[in-house]
Length: 562
Image: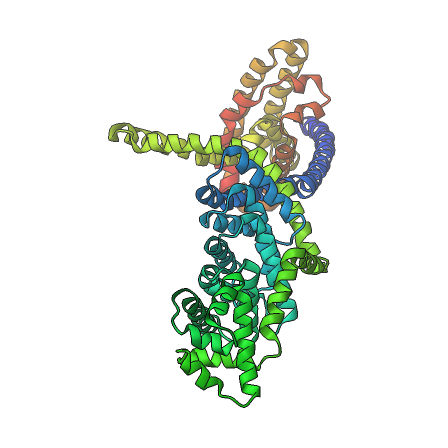
């Protein structure tokens, strides 16, 4: 009975020691988990509040800079300019986007079209601004088409490129005051530009005539053709004398007076010709018969002229409006500025301002990205030119490297689930043996003798450890060997009985304690020993004993009870 009491005392000491150990470990584990949760929340907050926005700004900045660079590449392709002039154009386009609700990509497209039409660098920004301001009033024609037609108009008429804004003002004024809009006027102007220029008409007069024809509802093709033929017939009569007397008669002039009048002001002669046709109609004469006598017999031409005759001072009024708007040069600016005061336009300008800021950031990032891209291209080229043997060797090496990740993962799982508990197998075994001893002391002296011998060896070892702390590791390993042998003998003798008769009372509690200890060790990690207050335990290395006991103990006790 003395032996049993001693074993009970050992069991109590061990259980109490383990309780303090669990308390320290759990306390540290709770603090560690709390610290981890705090770090996780802080990390998520930083990620959401700082990292992701900064990354998004970086991506947006690079995209904005890239889009502008791509769009401006078209300008570089079509415009013959120095690098300094290109820099000025870049700045000018960005500056325009801060006052006009058009993106830099749209503005660059207008400038590119201007380049194809030989608009000179010093006039390109004015051309771009004019098209941008005019584009919101166009109907039936895209801004790009309008840019091309106005550029062609300037080239055909020989208009000074610096007057492009005046051209825009004349078109806008006509669109605001006639029964048409800017789109048809642009198309009609481009169609009659050639014959009008040959006849000596000014740009403003040509645009005025185009506006009058567009206001009659004539399509650009039909109306343009009719007016071309009419002006050509007047020009031919003046220069060659063909039908000279007939035309002069309609205008109630002599042949020479007609020639002199046409040479001095061809537009006025055209207006007077239309007005005389109207007078003929009012006097009861035949307009169609008059046109036939002049050789203007086509149905399309006569239809267009009859519409002009029916209008109330349409042609003269349109030409006068165009000339005044050309001289004042404010119609386009005033009209567009009214539209740019709307909320939608202001939002677009605000967005353009943000994009201008992002472009600055993107421009700072682009050199680094271009350098990195160039390096990657060189690396890719080198890989493509690599000889087959070297490439295959590289692939083999890459396969080995690729396998490292899964192997490390598997190793980590092994360490987390198996290796961590091995750090304190001695403690775990001692606790388990204490529990087994307390239970088995009721069932026989043989078991008691085994446990007593085990306890005596363990206590002797502890006493020796206290005297020589520096030899702890070596002594504990030797003690471990004895423990392993004793445990083997004990377990093999009662294994079947434990599994079949006493599994729920002994084995399962032991396994539960071991699993609890394993979970605690996962959280504590390398800081585990700091929670232990016993000087002797803190000096012990458990790895050797664990190597001796882990595989056998798990195989003989834990596995059979799963």
